Length: 358
Image (cartoon, rainbow, N blue to C red; front, top):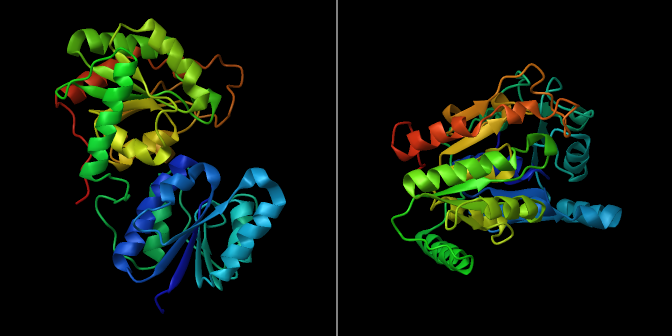
C-alpha cells in the first residue's frame, strides 16, 4: 500500500480528546516526516493544534457562525486534496466532514464503537474494542492499521521549551505577587483543576479548600487554581476560604497552549475529568484524577492511571451531564483525605511518576 502524501485528522471538539489525539499525530509525523498532516478542529480547541510541531495546517470550523462557516470550512478542506482521512471523532458530523473533504480513503471507527451512523461515511474501519477501554489506545489503532511503529511512551508535542518555561514562571510569580502571594524557587507548587464541561463531574469547593489549607500548613505547598471563565466564581470562593499565601488564582490568566508550561512547574495536578487534566498528563506531570459520572477505564490521564480516585458508587459511571437526582454522591464520596494521601506520597517520592518522552 502506498504511503499517503496528504492526511487529514478530523477531531473537532473536546480539549481532552484533541490533546490525546495529538499523540497519534506525533506518531505519524515521526514515521512519515514528509507526509503533509492537517487537522480539522473547532474554535475551542484550536490553540492546542495551531503551531504544533506535527501539524502542517489547521483548518478551523467556527461553529458559532453557523452553516455559512461550515460551508467555508468544507471548501477549505476540499482545496487541500487529501488522499486519506482519519476520523477520530466517531460522530455523524465528523463522518460528513471526512466524506465532504473529497478524500478517497476514509478510515473511521468500527460500527460497534461509532455513533450516529458515523460508520456509513468511512470505507475502512479500525477493529472493534470494548466501549469502556482507553480512548488514547483507541486512537492508536488508526496508527496500527497504517502499520506505523508505536512510540513508547507516547509523545504529545506539548512540552514547552526552556524559554517558555522561564517566561511562564515569571508570569506565575507576577500574578501571585499581585494577589499577595510570595513564590520562591524552592517551593512545592501544584495545580488544582477546578472545572469540567459537565456539572456532574465537579468536586465540591469545600474539599478543595481542605486540600489547599492542609498542604500549605504541612509542606508550605502552594496551589495554582486552574480554570476558565466558568470557574472564576469557584476559584474566588476557594481563594477567600484558604490561608493567606496558600493559593494563586490563575483562572482566565493563561491561554490553552500555555498550560503545558504552567504544569511544568507543578509537582502534581489534581481535579476531575477535564481537558487540562490531559494537558498535564501530556507534559508528564503526575495527575490525581477524580472519576464518578465518567469512567477512568476510558479517560484516565495517560501515565497517571495509578493515581485515579473513584468512590465506586452503584450509579457510576452514569455518563449524564447533570447528576440524575443522586446528590452528586460519586464526587462527594471522594474525600479530601483521599486526595491528600496521594499528594503526600507524590511529594515524598513514594509513587511512580509518568515517564517523559525523549
